Image (cartoon, rainbow, N blue to C red; front, side, top):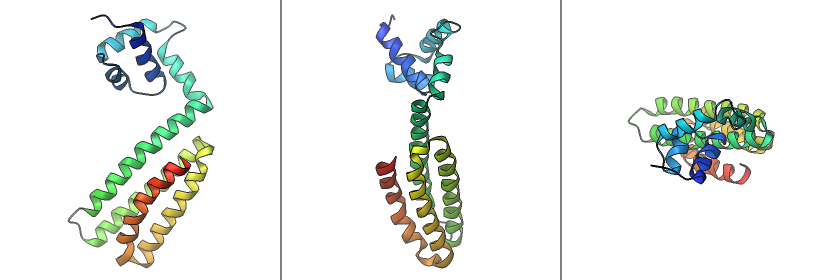
Length: 164
């Protein structure tokens, strides 16, 4: 089946913007094999998809866009992990340890992302404060930590909307 030049361009643009080839193809309604063929035919030319993707990733706009995408994906997964911990049958002390680990991973991820995209540092600072509050609650008020984390989790998403 022949596809329009606009479809090929949509796949190329999505791929250059950072989408995996399979996702870019799927969004445009073409097979991954078709997209791979288009990509291979462009290899070595001025329209080389991988070279364009690398160049875009090196621009401030491309880097910030990628950091935002990573941040969004991470926060979504982080929230799901918190829901899974809270919904588990594990004893409260194990749940607290798992939540502490999730809090640590959030802090480390935010630190790395804020270095990659300084404009997101306000969000990083806000989430660092939330992480410190969660750690404080876990350490000094372990019985109330779950309730505080239940509030902080959706509030973190609100901060991401405001600063992200």
